[in-house]
Amino acid sequence: PTAFPLPVPAIPTAPVTAELRDALRAIVGEKGFIEDEHGKQPFVTDWRGLLVGGAGAVIRPGNTEEVSKVVRLCHDHGVAIVPQGGNTGLMGAATPWPAHTGIVLSLGRMNRVLDVDPVGYAMTVEAGCVLQTLQETAAAHDRFLPLSLGAEGSCMIGGNLSTNAGGVQVLRYGNARNLVFGLEVVLPNGDVWNGLRALKKDNTGYDLKHLFMGAEGTLGIITKAVLKLWPAPKDVATAWLAVRDPRAALEILSEAHAASEDNVGSCELLSRAAVDLVMRHIPGVQDPLRADTPWYLLLEWSSSRPRQDGADGMSEKLEQFLADQLEAGRVVDAVIAQTVSQSRNMWRIREAMAEASRAEGPGISYDMSVAISRIPEFIDKGLKAVLDILPSIRPYPLGHIGDGNLHFSFMGPIGMDQQTLNQYTAAITRAVNDLITSMGGSISAEHGIGIEKLDELNHYRSKTELDIMRTIKRALDPQNIMNPGKVLRV
Ligand code: FAD
Image 1 (cartoon, rainbow, N blue to C red):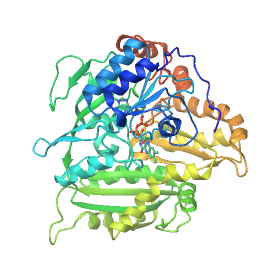
Image 2 (spheres, rainbow, N blue to C red; image 1 turned 30 degrees about the vertical axis):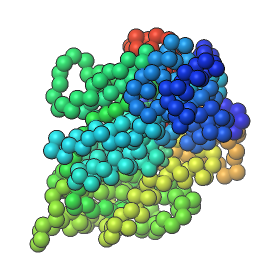
Image 3 (cartoon, protein in one colour; image 1 turned 90 degrees about the vertical axis):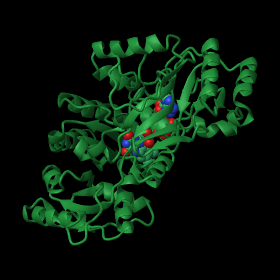
Image 4 (cartoon, rainbow, N blue to C red; image 1 turned 120 degrees about the vertical axis):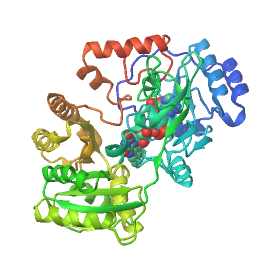
């Protein structure tokens, strides 16, 4: 793409002058400094390849002290900073605006695990650690880091915390902000706030760490975190269910909590169209049931108690549960993974969804939430509202049903290009977001606001709420240099 497909706000920002460039290079060294166009390209382009911004330079500090010096220098020169982790965010929050003449500050070189404390169930890490590496580190110590999402091979923990990422284990463990004991943050003036406390209890005034989580890099740069760990799962059973409808899916989940003895790990809803989308674009994935029902559930039970000889494990309990649900008419057909590779295949279907939709072409997706019990009502009303506007659009809803969070997604009509689809997008977005709001829901359940939903946040949040957010932003970043023009218009 050559054009930026969104309105670009006027944000006054100073350029990286020759003098500043030399000073930045002196702080981070040659391997931390990128200014050639080719080298900058991956840092100024978003994951979907839809947004391409600009940057005077990409700076990759090696430690907190370097981050602090870089930020202080930028602060003193009024130069804007776009913090970036793995650059997998879906709202354009890590992508600089086209007119951005400041820096992108990438945390990728700060990728050390500083401490693992299996007894205290805690792990201290730098912000640029890739999520999957941290999951593996925890597993190597017989512990579990529950944050898990499709981008885990490249997203970084600083980005996960800054977006308060969700993923497929929220049902049991909560989203990213629930997995944190403490943070270290470089503030927009270069000061370092050391909140790296591994304390379960700490009621000493405002809980500052929560300000920075979900702030999408607008209030400061997370440089380190103390993460919470859990016992490693030892007995896991994964099942793929064809279900009667979304209401039945919710009833199944509601019964599963007690039947599994509180061991439900994940519960993901997928429409047939979503499964077909993955089958079309992702090689090597098998359809577990080849059923032709409109709705499926991916249900996983896991226990940290190893399987006992002679006693029923998770698989047997899940099998009995599915038989009961079949009899109750909620489940149409089901299969339990017999091998690790069968379970991986089921998960691949769910996790390859973003890749598959990118390959499919033009589309729209709403990352929304309502109260869990209202999901079926939302699906019915939402589909009707969208199909009334564009009857040939192709819905493929899916999502974290146990969190009340759907990715309410649509492929464009066959043969329709992005530009033509864009002519319908504003009306569809208004209809969907009005419905979400009328049902007391959220227009962004886990992906954040970035630049994609700036106008929507402004439209749907109250003046009081927006005023509080702006007051916090102005107090911490009076010059508006920290990821300006993202989340809020200041
Ligand atoms: P980036 O994209 O680099 O940055 C995201 C935001 O955080 C930006 O505002 C950036 O400025 C800021 N930021 C990054 N690092 C820092 C830091 N150290 N300090 C301050 N600010 C910082 N998201 C979900 O919630 N759930 C999912 O299930 C999910 N699945 C996904 C599947 C795929 C295939 C893809 C591509 C994305 C998915 N996402 C999902 C979105 C995305 O992966 C998450 O938002 C992720 O947490 C972003 O991490 P990142 O390191 O890539 O951050």
